[in-house]
Length: 211
Image 1: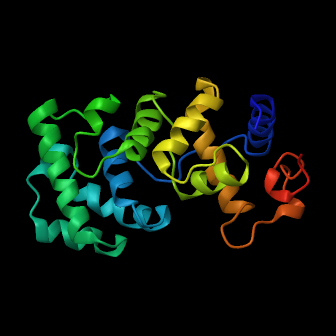
Image 2: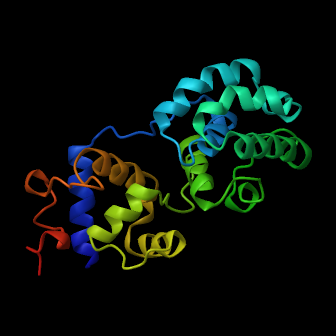
Image 3: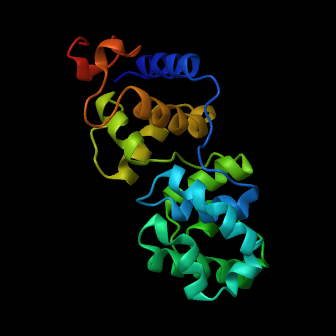
């Protein structure tokens, strides 16, 4: 797909979703990092339900670093895989205290050294907490739409991210994932995409109308 067509798609996404934002509730880098880890294989809505109690008890990374595993597990139980997630939260908090003096790191290289943090989570934190664009978040929605829209032919998230970074202007790196996620939730759904009512159907190769 040509860069010109991609720019037209992004322009239409921006026009139709002018106020997209992350759906996870958070205050500051610490909370965002932890809720993003919790959101793995769990809905943002579910994470938002348990996060107030979590951060009421563990107000900062230092208090989380010394959390008792059973108490932490109890608070996050409904997010699924709660035992492994509790270990990740605690280990990450301990590493932040030990290696970064209690401050959430703000570079890709530093963030991916933390337990439970790969490029996807790091990109979420970098853009939404620090305003940095070092990559593009590739979640299930971004993966699906990138393939359907012809942005990539890959299935591996890392290769998809590389394709997107090559084809999309850096100024749009942070916003594109939010736009695609929103479109994926409202119109280009996994099971039954609403192609007839989609404002991208004349630009999307999956409709069979684009040469």
